[in-house]
Amino acid sequence: MTTKLELNIDTDQVVRNFLEWAKIDAPSTKEGFIAEQIEKKLQSLGFTIQYDEAHHHFDGEVGNMIAYWEGTMPDLPPLFLSTHMDTVLPTKGLKPIIRDDVIYSDGTTILGADDRAALTAYIEAIEYIQQNNIPSGPIELILTVSEQQGLKGARYLDYSKVQSKYGYIFDSDGDVGQIITKGPFSSKFHIEVIGKASHIGLNPKEGINAFIVAADVLKAVPQGEIKENVLVNIGIINGGDLSSIIPGSVNMIGEVRTFTQEDLNNTLDTIYLTASKATQSHTASVNFTVEKKYIGFEIEKNHLLVENAIESFKDENISYYVCDTLGGADTNTLNENGLVCITLGNGFKNLHTYQEHISIENLVNAVKTAVELIIKWRENHIEESEE
Image (cartoon, rainbow, N blue to C red; front, top):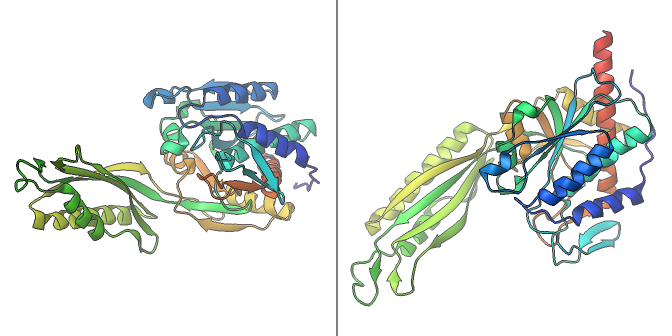
């Protein structure tokens, strides 16, 4: 039986605790200290803590944290909530500014709302449930490292330590109310343009300038939204040794994002063929390699996770919408490895820039949503056990 509760969330406490978490400096691979602080907090809430060894794959300070609280109804299936502990850039010296109920940094650092907003929401929600004696099934927190460096923590997560099957990841720039049920396939590609190095003063006619060849490749390879739901970008170019040496090679790195494996494969083939053709008039060549980033996911819109999110937003009078995204998140990798989860928006804006900000309304609504999701998960499974 569904019960509608009036949630009285302490806004000042949410903002205060968000800023405390945001001020802890933890860029990718440097999550050791924040992990210690989270561990202390979760242990005070009755969680048991495990770490895996994921960090050994990329020289990090600490592995992923898997925290488990059995709740007041330990026989119910557990629900997981997941986010990452790292930020894309440092937040050391963060000086927050609140203007018109929106939190900014002073412009000298990022704010770190991606994804301290989720961490705050989860912890505040669990505290609220405990302090208000709200019955709960088991809750598991999956807190990953180095998410900002290509979902590395989730990729190397020791999934044998995870007890839950279903869950949510609050990690999108949509306002609270955004429900993402479909995410992209993505691969990184490397184009090495091979010309011929030569000294400009001694053998100028022998060189084949790889920069000139690369310019033709760059112009020839389609970029941007090359067709509906197919994105291509070349974001890194490097090469050359000395100003006196005609460059013999240039390396370009890009990526493709699509909603289907077929589109991904076809686009990568097109990029290779186009790049190869662009080098032919220069008597040059290319080496082309592909590195998988993550595969796509799609959760049915009538899945319990989606229905519970919708009901949670309705109960809190939060506008909601269901959508797809070509943005990647740990959601991709967790689903790939057998868990079932969806992404929810938590409202950070201008992420990965010094203009990053988040509204207080989104912070508070994220806490309310987390509380409602935990309640509804418990109610669903009590009803199942009674049938």
